[in-house]
Length: 252
Image (cartoon, rainbow, N blue to C red; front, side, top):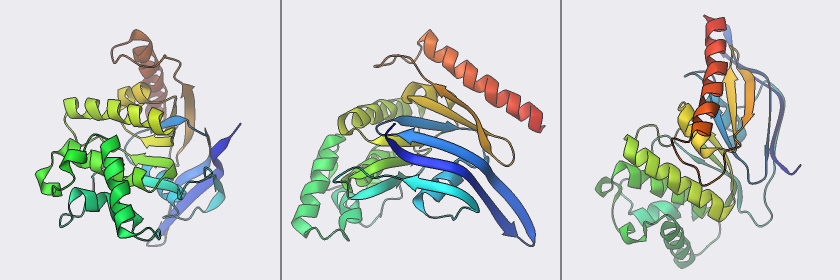
């Protein structure tokens, strides 16, 4: 087993006004190199908190978190948010190059890599535009290019398509699948959309409970390329939904 993410006994609690809120408790999760894993669960269960812990933005209360890096990777991880978070005063190519500014690369090399990464997501022709001149889907593709430009080993994605309309969301799901296969990245993808999770991922991990823990881990055996209305995918989605529904009924 070639692990890229190894989480063991992870717990996280916040103290506010003297009250301790336990968010995660004794959570175990392992993600292998090149694997596409989707994390699902109810709103507020701790999915985004888990990504924050991996990025080092939140410190765990207990447990171990180990993150590996591919040979030659410039960063272990890069994070793509729900909103693109582009700098409005910078052109698209400059936004993509932003994460490269502290890497030691010269200005010309940063621009060349940014353009190459934009080319890989089909946006090279929009390199000179500003963010306000782009559609929502185009902005999210720029955000993906910005993450890929720093050549991370692992892509963390926090509900990146949830604010988009259905046709755009489906187009970007297919684009992400293509990019994943082309670049061979390890992806941890947070979503509240179970159909999206089973369509994209090799494995779907369901978080539930309060505090949250892994309630189920389901390998999606449907072959690729996948069809959205494949009965096998729909069966996987029902299994995940049943698991989460059972957890909600217990919490109620």
